[in-house]
Length: 369
Ligand code: T4K
Image (cartoon, rainbow, N blue to C red; front, side):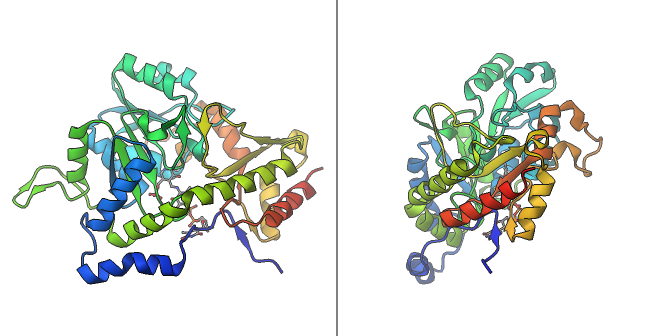
């Protein structure tokens, strides 16, 4: 009986490598609050991601939430409902109103042709998501933001290491927020980062992640605690040594999936994006029941019966969540609604054996009618 295959599996260094990395923490007794591992990781990531400025946080969610606070956003924020709960929750928890823009059916990022009609005199920012590692139309978003004097905060949770036209993905927009959660291409166990251009913003963010403390006798903002600890930073230092090799293995798994499934009628893969160096973060496929014969939920069930844990990322859309009052109408984002009802993210991680990819594909093909 083969082991259960889950949608992903955390990348980890060898135990000895991590043990060696954390030895100095025992010597120093310095566990958190921007210690030496934090500083070193910040320096290495700045270079790896080719960014002007970077700050490390506890997770990707706090990166989003505190970035919005640091920018002093007000009123309405244009965003996508086709994302993980975090993006919309960060907006709402800042007292802002999310205004949902539909996505395009090719790569599921924000449909830039629909942004301008949603702008009002209350709009202060655009929060697009490079969903699954697919790069948004950054040029058009920049044009619109400049024209209407809006801030742009990219949810870059899925785009660690992605480059567009040779530039690090976080070069675009005012701010980009990464997640280094255990399930991501690159992890620090839990963790996240904010990349930005404006030094003043960086100073505010640094205070916000440390209770708003300016110095030992001055607290200038209403902050939170979102500091990355030394054990997470140490994991990050180890994982950074291997991330290129991990991405190469992911690429091989994605290519194997495509060899097996890309020519099958009724299964849609996102085409490779021009000028993009990808990170192969997720493998989303969309089922067209009229052509394939089985729908997404049926394939999901059959995979589950075979101990294969695909996931319905991102279903349901965030604009259908019960927790929002007033409620939103998902029919206003029909493309996102249709995709969320038909999409499945298939298992993908560096150590996924190609034979397992073949087995997953044959289970999927067994559903075809
Ligand atoms: N923005 C976007 C667009 C995001 O996708 C996310 C997070 C964020 C913002 C916020 O970033 P963080 O604050 O999380 O840094 C998972 C992750 O928890 C979440 O980070 C991620 N997006 C989301 C897409 O996926 P769940 O609830 O699906 O996770 P869970 O526990 O079901 O894990 C999925 C699979 O991963 C498991 O079946 C096995 C594997 N796994 C999981 C864990 C926890 C491991 O191999 N090791 C582990 O330690 O949310």
